[in-house]
Every structure is written in structure tokens, then in C-alpha cells.
Image (cartoon, rainbow, N blue to C red; front, side, top):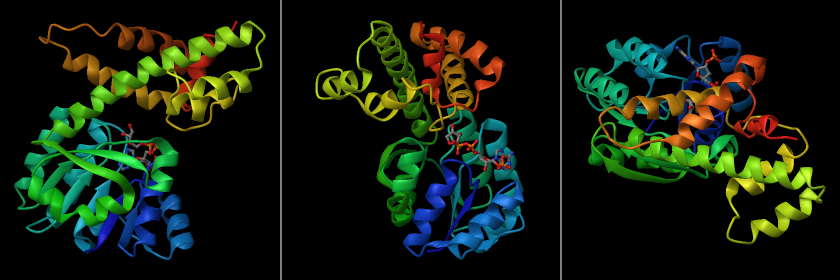
Amino acid sequence: MKAGVIGLGAMGAGMAANLTKQGLLAAVWNRTYDKAVDFAGQHGVAAAADAPTVAAQCDVIVTCVSADADVLEVVDAMLPELGEGKVVVDTSTVSADTAREAAERVAATGAQFLDAPVSGGKEGAEKATMVMMVGGDEATLERVRPVLSAISRSATYMGPSGAGQVTKAVNQIMVAGINQGVTEALAFGQAQGLDMDKVIEVLSGGAAGSWFLQHRGPTMVRGVYEPGFKMALHRKDLEICRAMLENMGVALPVVEMTLKQYRPLIEGGHGDDDISGLYRSKRA
Ligand code: NA7
């Protein structure tokens, strides 16, 4: 099985490197071509000239681009080279509607599309410890499992097209709440003059312990907010959640508060910071 990766950003580059380790990677493409050439040079794989070339050369095409319009743009570009037996696995976080639209366009060629967003951050992509939530055809998921196993800790079938993205929306609401809780609490502790490394160490073993506290706590209290997971991308995800709310009769106050607090930070030039940069607005 030959796999290709389109989009060698913070997440895609780690996934592509892990596919190389398993001998599965046949081609990569990145819109900013220098990135593809650098990756190809380091990992001994071909840098394709464009997305359709990756589609032509590979059985499984893993895409990891930014937002809804980007996924549809890349999918449309590949359509002439897709056909029976080929599978597009989109690991970007976009709306469930976009996933269903992309799946329809791909299915018209005889190929298959899986929405397969991931959670675990840049470190998870590099160490292949991400979890993956998959929507689409279950048999297709099983067929491409060797590729998904090379880039993730688990790939769980969630239901028909779009179900992976809806699950990811649930995840992103939780991430907003965890970010709110950890940044607010640590800023409070720091303002009280505590030794914050000790605070993080002791609390990590108790009921408030979390991945975010352990991995982002020590850096946020030092004013370091390197990605990670870009705040501008989390805002995109929370806006997707907000758009899904219509006619659902539930409220998302944590999402609303987080969007409100991200806004001045992103407008102030911090959109590429890790989401733990929310700490800036909590500091005394
Ligand atoms: P990054 O590090 O911002 O990387 C985004 C990648 O997507 C990067 O390689 C971009 O190419 C590529 N991209 C974006 N738009 C396009 C279009 N229209 N066509 C082709 N390539 C494109 O994001 P992450 O890796 O952290 O996250 C990626 C996704 O996973 C996102 O949905 C997250 O929410 C989860 P560039 O180098 O800019 O030319």
C-alpha cells in the first residue's frame, strides 16, 4: 500500500515522517513547495509537483490542510486522478458538512473519503500517539488501517461521513474548557507567589491532573507559547461548533467566552501561538 501526504504543516510533517518509518510513504506535496523539498531531502521520498500527482502515485492520500475551503480545494484538484481503490483520508479539522460534501465528490470518482480528524497535538503527530476519530465507510477504514496505525495510537470508527468531525467538535469544546481552567488557575497561583513548577507537579497527580496541565503548564507560566496547537486554528474549530448549534437547543458558554478572549489576542498578532497563550489574558 502506497501512502501520500498533502500538507506538511505542524501536524502533517509528523504524520509523513512516521509513514516513512513504516516504509509506506511514496510521495508528499506542500503548497509552499520549499517545505516539500526540505522534507523530501530529509526523508528520502519524492516531492510531488502538485496534489494530483500524489493522487496518481498513491493508494491512500492523507490530507492535513487548514480549513473547510482548503480541504475542498485540495479534493477538487485530485478528482481527475482518483478512482476505484483509492482512499482520501482527511485529518484536517473542518465542519461535518464539508466532510460529507468532500465524501460525495470523491465517491463520484469511485474512490472513498474518510473524515479522520486527530487529537494529540504536534507531539502526538511526531510520536504517532494521536487518537483518530473516523467517519465514512467502516470497511474502507479497515482496509487503510495499516496507514492509520503508522500515524496514530488508535483509529476509532464513529459512524457515517461527518461523524469523525462531529466527534472532533466535542473534543474541541472540551479543550476550550480545559484551557480556560488551567490558564485561569495557574495565573491565580502565580499571582499568589507560589512555586509554579511544584504546583504543576503536585496537582498533576491529583483529580485536576491533565495532559494540558503537564505539557503546557510549565511553559505557560514562563510566558512561552510555542505551538503546539495554534490559537487561530482552535478559533476556527470553535466557530465550527458554534455554527453547528443552530436548532440544537443547547448552549455553549465556554465556547463563547473562549472565542471572546481569543479575539484580541489573535488581532494582536498571537494567532500562531499555542492555545495556552490564553494565559496572556489571565495574568495579573
Ligand atoms: P499548519 O501548521 O498551519 O499547516 C497547515 C498546512 O496546510 C500547511 O502545510 C499549508 O501549506 C497547508 N494548506 C493550507 N491551505 C491549503 C490549501 N488551500 N492548499 C494546499 N495546502 C494548504 O496547521 P496544522 O498542521 O497545525 O493543522 C492542520 C489541520 O489539522 C488543521 O485543520 C488543524 O485544525 C488540525 P503552506 O505551507 O501554508 O503552503
